[in-house]
Amino acid sequence: AVGGTVAEPKTISVTEPLLLNAARGKVVDRPPVWLMRQAGRYMKSYQAICEKYPSFRERSENVDLVVEISLQPWQVFRPDGVILFSDILTPLSGMNIPFDIVKGKGPVIFDPLSTAADVEKVREFIPEESVPYVGEALTILRKEVNNEAAVLGFVGAPFTLASYVVEGGSSKHFTKIKRLAFSQPKILHALLQKFATSMAKYIRYQADKGAQAVQIFDSWATELSPVDFEEFSLPYLRLIVDSVKQSHPELPLILYASGSGGLLERLPLTGVDVISLDWTVDMAEGRRRLGPDVAVQGNVDPGVLFGSKEFITNRINDTVRKAGKGKHILNLGHGIIVGTPEENVAHFFEVAKGLRY
Ligand code: CP3
Image 1 (cartoon, protein in one colour):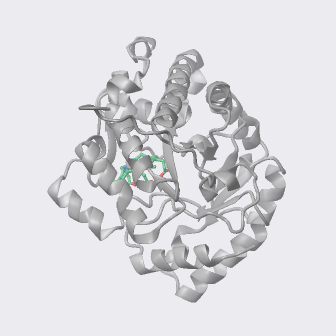
Image 2: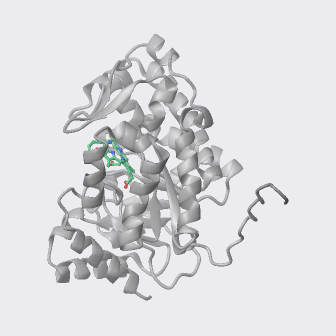
C-alpha cells in the first residue's frame, strides 16, 4: 500500500490463552492464575503513578495511564489474565450519574437516586461515546499481551451498581436501597433494567475492542436474602448473560459475588461460564454445590498472602487439589489487600505457574 498504512492482518492464534481454555472446560495442563485487584493498590509502581496523578478518574480514564497500570502486574508476575485498570463505576458519568472516587473515602455519587424521576434521568449507556478510552486501552492491551495471557474486561452487576447510586457511595446497612426495594420496588426494577441493558452493551463493546473474557462483579448482591436475590439480582444477571451470549456465544463470562456461600446453587442459573468463590466455602464443597457445568475460580483467602511462603504454597496446593482437574482458574477469594508483600505475590504466581495436573 503505497503511501498508506497497511491494515494489520487479524492474527488467528492456534494456541488460545490458557485461561480461556480452562473457562471453556477444555483440556489444560495446569490451572491458569490471575489475582483480583492485581492492577493498582499494593504495587509500589502504582503508588508512584498515584503521586504524579492523584485523581483516580484521571488514572482510569487516560488511555496511556490505563494501559501502563494494567500492564504493571503483567510485567512483573506474568499472570494468565491481564485485567483492565478501570472501575465498575466508570460507566456512570456516561449514564448521567456524576461520581468521583475519593482517596480514603471510596466512591461518591453526587446526587444519589431515590425517585422515579431520578431513574428517568438515567441515560442508556453508549460506550463508544462515553468511554472511548476503555476501548482504546483494551485494543492496545490485547496487542501488548499478544495471547500470552487473556485480556480481561469487567462490569458491575445491576444490583451492585444500583446500591452505589442509591446509597450515594459505600454502605454498611444498605438501608436506602432496601427502603426502595421493599417499599417502591417498581422504581428499583426500572433502574436495574437500565443497568442490565447498559452493562450488556458495555460487555459487548469491551469484547469487540479486545477483551477475551469479562468478569461481572456483584459485590453487594449477598446483602440480599436469597428470595430478594432472586427478585433484584438474578433476573438482571440472566438478562445480561442471555443478551451477551446471543451476540458473543464464545465469550467466557465470570461472576463474582463475595459472601455468596448461601447462594451457590442459584448462581449457575445466571448462565455464566465461571463462578468465582470467596474463601468462606470449602472449594470441594463449592464445586459440588455449583454442579458440573460451570468452571470455578478464586477461593484462596487474600490474607494467605501475608503468611509464610510455605503456607502460601500449601494453600495453593490445597485449593487446586480440591478444585479437581480442569475448569478451574486459580485466584483469590477477593481482591489483594493493600500492604500485601509483593514478594509473596511473586511467590504465589511462581508456584501456581509451576503446577502440572
Ligand atoms: O486490578 C483490578 O482489579 C482492576 C481494577 C479494578 C478497580 N476496581 C480499580 C480501583 C476493579 C476490577 C474494580 C472493581 C470494583 N470497584 C468493585 C468490585 C470488586 C470488589 O472489590 O468487590 C467495587 C465494589 C468497586 C467500587 C470501588 N472502587 C470501591 C469500593 C473503591 C474504594 C475502596 C477501595 O477498595 O480502595 C474503589 C476505588 C478503586 N478502584 C481503587 C482501585 C485501584 C482504589 C483507589 C485508588 O487506587 O486510588
